[in-house]
Every structure is written in structure tokens, then in C-alpha cells.
Length: 193
Image (cartoon, rainbow, N blue to C red; front, top):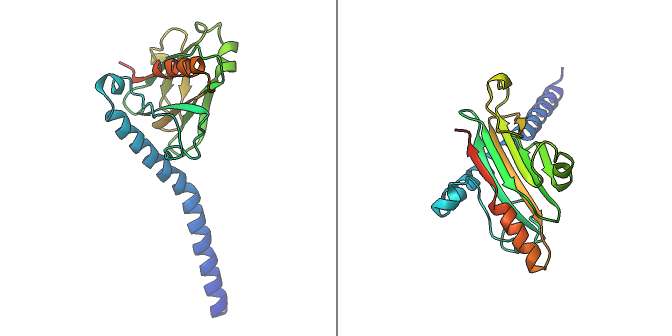
């Protein structure tokens, strides 16, 4: 092999390695930073709100970029959890008449579970209407030993650290905004006792 061919092969190998490392590492680093900030903001809230495990950011405006490209038409609620010790119990009373969703993300930023207003209405036989109950467990958890709340959907996460993001569509109607505020205030994310 000629010297220039070795250099070219080495350069290509370094480029491929750097690309693969960036594709693998970037999402994990971004999620680690996002989860850390949300955990800090949750802990910095008044004690009563921090006890719910949920961070309720103010309505979105041009100054906020906690979430990539946040929408001013949505209210958000977030929480983070480390499932290594105990499962996460998630509950909410969501009687909001407009679109809403609760999405779970793994440590690598992959979305692994979503429930929304339509899906919850379809699953109403399993839970009370408008009642969301989830038990999020670490990967490989033995389901025979779980103590899931009645009617809860058990969700196995792909990683021990997870992020929950609740979105609620709002309009300019004050009644609509009040409904969304009540729904997101009902969200609870606590480690299972």
C-alpha cells in the first residue's frame, strides 16, 4: 500500500469512528443534560409541587427553549426518573377536552411509549374515564413480583433513566386553559413505595 493510500484509509477509519461515536453519544449526552436540568427545576419548585415529582414550566413564549422548538399552543409538564431502584408510578386525571399526550423517552432520546386522549378513551375499560395510571419499570424487570396499581398499564423502559413529557393543547379560551392547567397539575410521578 502506498503512503497516501494508508493516510486515506486512516482518515476514512477516523471519520467513520467519529461519526458512529457522535451518532451513539450525542443523543445520550443531550438527554442526560435535559434530565439533569428538569430534575433541578423540579427540586427548585415549592415543596408541595416538588413532592409530585413533576415540573410545570410556565406557558411557552419566545424566551423559553427548555424543549426543542416548544409550541405556544401547548402546555407542558415533565418529570424524570431513575428506575434502577424502584418503578415509577405515573397518574393523572385528564378531563381536558382537547388533544393531550404523555410520552416516555429513554436515556438515548428514543420515544418508547405514548398515550393520548384518543388512546385513553379506547382503553377506558381498563381504567376510569380520563384516569391515566402507568407503572414504568426498568429493563428486564420480573413482572411476576410487581405490585402494579389496579388498572395501571405496565411499561418496560429500555433504560434505567427516563423522561416523561406531557403536552396539552390550549386555545385562547380561558375555560380551555383552566382545563389544561387542572389536567397537568394532576400529574404525579413518584417512585413506587
